[in-house]
Length: 198
Image 1: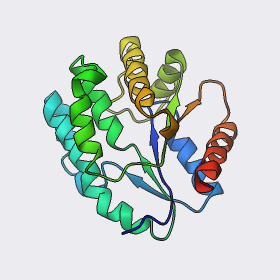
Image 2 (image 1 turned 120 degrees about the vertical axis):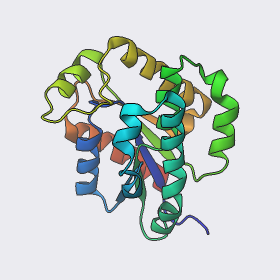
Image 3 (image 1 turned 90 degrees about the vertical axis):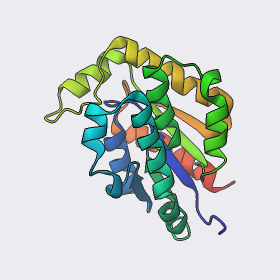
């Protein structure tokens, strides 16, 4: 099945502003947003996050990408699609928890990415550690995945940068530390327009 529209992914740690930016994009563009994990995977998600080992969490989140892929392909026939996190985020958390470098998982990432539709462009939203922590702590509802240590923030940056270095033309970095939501959305829409014109 030929892909008719661009496929995008939004990546970034908790607290960088993904939800607000995605909402802004939806208000400016006719695009379908899909979550990974999707609705079918929500039932066991809390137990996996609380009781799962690093490898079981990795495999759970990794498989959730393949589970939503058929829906993504169908949606792309009618509209652009953006995934709220996709394949790379499954690797990043695992790499941090297992203290791995990209070279340690490169063979597995190559195997995994060859067997799934990959985004035409991935937007990495990043934010300075102190601002990310402030945003996370200001939330009414916290997640068990809200790791707010400086070590985790720094490790997240390293991991995402290792993926960006592999395919720089498939990534766009958006620093949300001091920009308004409108500025962030405008930056992303400009890149999306460029992708659409290729």
